Amino acid sequence: MKTKELYKIFKEFSEITTDSRNIIKNSIFFALKGTNFNGNEYASKAIELGCSYAVIDEKKYVQNNKYILVDNVLESLQQLAHYHRQNLKIPIIAITGTNGKTTTKELIKAVLSKKYNIIGTEGNLNNHIGVPLTLLSMNDSTEIGVVEMGANHMGEIKMLCEIAEPNYGLITNIGKAHLEGFGSFEGVIKAKSELYEYLSKNNKIIFVNIDNKILKDISIKSNKITYGTIANSNYQGEFIEANPFVKLNWKYNDTNLQNYRSNYVETQLIGKYNFENILASICIGKFFNVSDDDIKQAIEQYKPTNNRSQLIKSKFNTLLLDFYNANPTSMKEALINFADIKSENKIIILGDMFELGNESEKEHLKIINILKRNNFKDFFLIGNVFNKVSKNTKFKSFESTNDFINWVKNNRISDSYILIKGSRGMHLENIIEFL
Image (tube, rainbow, N blue to C red):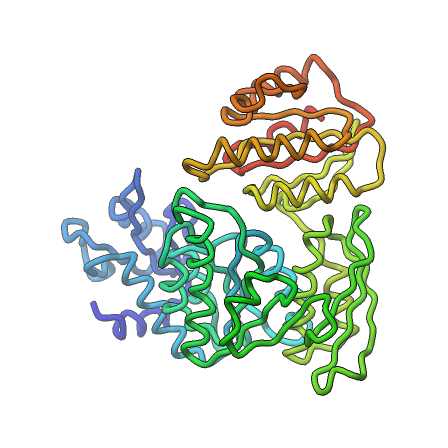
């Protein structure tokens, strides 16, 4: 079936389902394939549970006219999303970067929602499947779309831009992550730059952190709006403190940069590294004419979730949870920020960083060298790589999260301020109940 014909069905049944375990009644089921599953095998179940149609790409699974046969289900989903985007006629803001893109996206959604009907990426559905699903969740009442784009290989951001056709874009930062897929730090820069390249080629606007030399350099030829701490940025911020929550002043002038109005914000976000994420949301909010008071309220009311710079108090300790993901850049920033927080009995618990390829041991060793320079109460390192490279150090290391749990069961930690950070695959959330 051609995309145009499929779109007619989508306009009547506009909910999309890709998981037969979570069926939405009267939706269209897309039978995607994965490494360990074939969605075609679940098409009949999806129909039985209430889907109006099932899009499949293997003829043997067709039973009646409720089964739509295509050459490739994933490509059909992407083509449908692109066709839908072209019919939306709304501005779409694309966000990518090594660190902070989900937090920045959530802040931008919070700010813009004060004035507009916003649809944005849910959670971190930012890949070749998540971006199409985000676009297809937008409808005639949507006024602005906010789309997060992730990548771990060259060409992915370019492909996602071609599907979403963003009018505006933002790169939060560029750091060392997914080196296994990109090959080198230079590869990361080139991959993230694909967003700027798409927007510049199509004469669109980018929002640039002018304090960031890499972003400044790769955006020289772009049509841009700037934010940062320097005086000639369009939107200027002043970091006050992060002890533990970020406080800042910001000011702006859209005309001659001479008549600034200053604004003060107290956030519920931990870490100086979130200062630039907050400033990005302010910049975009002002660009889209959200009032200063609404911006202040949106940012001050925003509270992070899902183990992203979350502060919680357990029965025994204060825990700073920052293990949604980790890479050398974000790990270093988290440690620097934690060192600046004024508190007694500070403890570090770090888990391995994934997808670093041949640079893995080298990057983990750099983190250990940072730890050696800080006077914290205690250090715990978890994971095969940290355990290997931390030999002959004063740090306690464990091969797995379960090994650490078994240790801490017999060695109670209490009255401490604890940073927990590592890659999501380390499952560090499992240790919370024992702290």
